Image 1 (cartoon, rainbow, N blue to C red):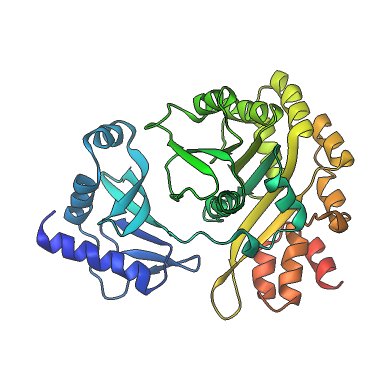
Image 2 (cartoon, rainbow, N blue to C red):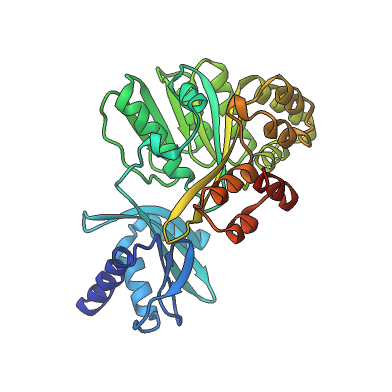
Length: 357
């Protein structure tokens, strides 16, 4: 990378901090774009992204093995530390004959678990010796940050051996009370499924699995939980019920029954979350929480999830809350606008009922 390109890149990266952005997107022929409080904005005063800049970043930031992977698969996602100062989740994809690069800032600040606002029942599960906890949410919903807060809470308070399975590795932990071993898929372990197989035969207290997607990974994560360990896992899906459906549908019809049986027996809590804009600037975490009681366990075993939200709505005293209830609470407390709640609601009629309570 020549001097002019390096200076241009430094300026672009500095803009992330200047504008408190979460992401920087570089696509040839368009202005650099920053995502600020969830909204994409062109970077004012900057020239259109040049192909030479994109190619220079690609050449400087990828090792030979990564270059081969990008050439073969036309996409690569990995983590990169720039000048030992700032860390990014980097996505490079082939599009329209060239490449585009997205840089997602990985903060070295881990939000204290207590600031998430979850009920005490969730903390008891995290502090326990066994269980299966799911954090769901769409892209940019803060799933990784929430899992990191949970891991750091354990790190600060308990003597446990924690193993993470990540693709790519984002937040870096430093051992305190706990021993934390971070394993990156493709570098430290072939796959998450293989990593879970290893955990089954190791002295591990807590397994952390980022972005469970396939049936093999789900089945083995349940097996680790059933063996008496705590499993913290994330799922890329919007809402608790859609996440449960997505997991069930990853199995063949013959395999679904065994999966739902194991899920009902081992699931301790499911959380689904979004990051949404606050009144006056900034963002707030909105979430829903399901703590499987006997009624919900029976629904999961039967594969009939239609009444889960109704059960959650009437179980606030148990620590459960739906997204619509939480959004209404945020509106009534003056934290978010009504329009924001409506844009993020699962059911507009339910939201209106809770707003009027």
